[in-house]
Length: 336
Image (cartoon, rainbow, N blue to C red; front, side):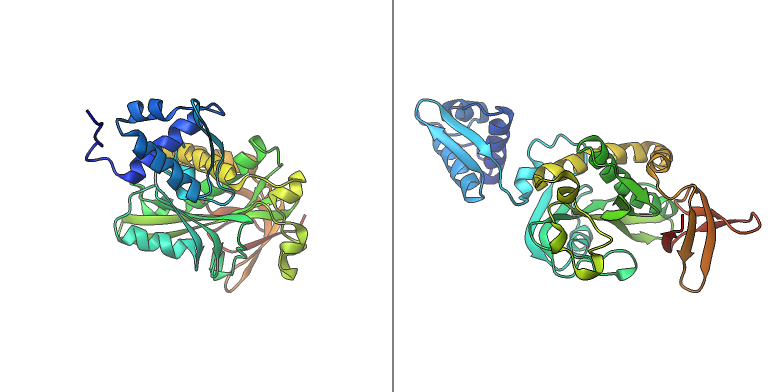
């Protein structure tokens, strides 16, 4: 009797499961028959899934009597590649990838308005209108960095939302420091820096009603494979990349997986303690605290020593005369 397809299993599901099996095999061949029996589908369905993955630039080898082997994934970022086998509780279970968008922030906000679940990740190879804090343009060339936005729906007060910006910076800095041995630090509130040069920026945009959060778009842009000549002239002296720091190109999909796993773990803790641990981790990674700073606000300038970070994520500055000033926003310059 011919084997029948499971009527409720779509092609995309089979494709993802085949990729998961090949990835877990870690360089070993897996026969089409084994995958067919394991998934409860025909061998033809397995073959179709493999061919579909190949068209998405997964390099999959095959040999008679042995089966299929995953040689490597795509060099560019593909949603299916990122979400398969990620092993997260919330962040990155669904990853939607694009070649180019105006801004991943805008795309993610549109998805959120239309009911996409928490943890949905939007990532693009390039952005034509990427932006950072205070509406500034963010350079987002194709194939060089990670331009990413994540939909969050935390059951916390809107006043706790700024801590999510700190959370992104902590997640990125921890991955750079612990997995890639890049000495990353955080400049308040959202810049991850290496040797005083910016390698990543984080941003959150909040949509709330009264005391309830509808959704938060948490975004980051991480410079991965830029060489020095690829930065715009105005950034040449102030920006860096993982490639510059390590002296070699990095696998961007693997970097993104690492950041999403770390973000997922930090976000789970945030939902449990309201951000208490994030504040402590941020303090430990800060290059701002203890330094004399100048903070440019919209209508004034605050100078003094950065003493601490408040429970709401604000920077506490000791001004001349010993008065403490809580600063919720602004551009920080480290004076010494």
